[in-house]
Every structure is written in structure tokens, then in C-alpha cells.
Image (cartoon, rainbow, N blue to C red; front, side, top):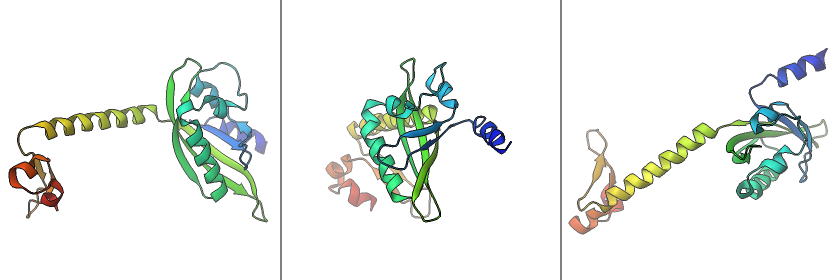
Length: 175
């Protein structure tokens, strides 16, 4: 009855839960069925979803950070891309912790991950817009600046043209 309730709870969460071996192999011992929806598949979990699905450009970093997190014994979180069955790339946020037995030995890694694609894509779009804005501002033939609305009108940004116009670097002007 307890196992049935536990399984029902785990399998209704809006995230993928997993249990891995606490060593460098990171052998998957359990993965919840939500993996099927996340990865766009009809069949059940194979136990190799993580190793097979982490985006090739993120695979080494994700593995390294995961192994370091397991070694540290501290809870850890990382973000990386995964590839769905339909080829679409998604971003996931993965959080895990190493569970220890009474003598303090690592028994298993307990974790969960969920889709953060919308937030990650919004962050990337914002970074691109900021890059374009900065490029535009720094190409204008005038000094552009931003000040705080406080008693001192503290400068928080000034374009590099300030050096040509006033002979002071942008960093010195703001500080």
C-alpha cells in the first residue's frame, strides 16, 4: 500500500524523477514515466534517457557537473539541453542530491528535472536584444548615458564615446 501511494505520488508530479547510482557511471536505477511526455515518445523508459538524450554540445559539461555534484555530497542544480524523439531541442533544469546511509556512504542519487525551454528561450532572446541595443548605442555619434533617479543622479551607464568627447573613460565616468 505504501509503495502504491509513493508510486502514485511520484508518477503524478509535473516533472521527471530519477534515481541513479552514486558513482561516475551514473547508472540509472529508476526514471519516472513522465520522461515519455518530456521526450515525446510512446514507449516506456529505457533507463538510458539521460545519456542518450543530453544534447551533444552539453553532454560533457552536464556529466562533469553531475559527477562533481555527486562527489561533493551537496545538492546541485544544472541546466542543459535534451533532444526529443521528434528532433526538437528542449532545455531542462536538473536538481539532485546524494542520499547517504547511516555510516555516511553514498547510497544513491535522487533527482528531478523539468522543461524550462520557454524561460531559457526568453533569456536568450533578451541577451540578443541587449547585444543589439548595446551595439546600436555604442555606434551612435553621440554620448549616451543612463542615470539613476536619485538625489545625486548617479550614472549607471555611459557609452564609450564619452572618452572621445570628454577625455574620460566610460568606466571612470560612471565611477
